[in-house]
Amino acid sequence: MKKIFLIFVLFFGSINILNAETNRIVAGNKDAKITIIAYESLTCSHCADFHREVYPQLKKDYIDTGLAKIEFRHFPLDIAAFNASKVAQCKSDEGLKILNSLYSNQQEWVRGNTVEEINDNLKKFIKNQGFEVNFEKCINDKKIEDYVLNDRIEGTKKFKVNATPTIIINDKKFDKTLNYKNLKKSLEKLI
Image 1 (cartoon, rainbow, N blue to C red):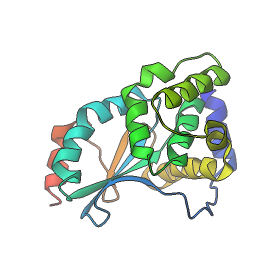
Image 2: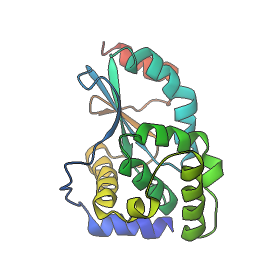
Image 3: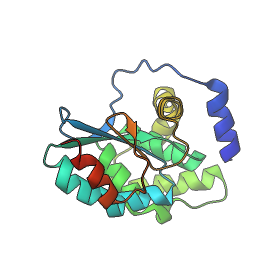
């Protein structure tokens, strides 16, 4: 399934986005001096670890204080992550809450042997978490699909993203081991 998804992305290349209503999922002061971009896949266990172990401290020390903002960009590694990304992006006003919920409870919805089973689990999970999402509309929305795929394509072309999570700080790829201590050292140099 991963191969089919990657072939799809590579075959279609760059996709134009014409939807001005699609908003990036961002936390923090939009005018912050430091911009952090996080390329993530919602089925990636390392991404879930980042949200549990690194992001809360990063949020407390840099995002909530106005020193930095973080943009969450989609880099789905499989069809389950692709559909979950579409759901989060479809409700971008609640996107951060949806992302956090999906990462915090990853093992609850990332189950199934077919796309249909995985989608059923994702749909049930979203509903049980209280998010009001028109699931079918979100996963079948061509503009949202293009938006998610464009994130992945841009990450590959512009930043040479090949794994998740990949962190970009002020347009430079963070190349150290991803933990709070290393991230803090890099951020402190920019303040």
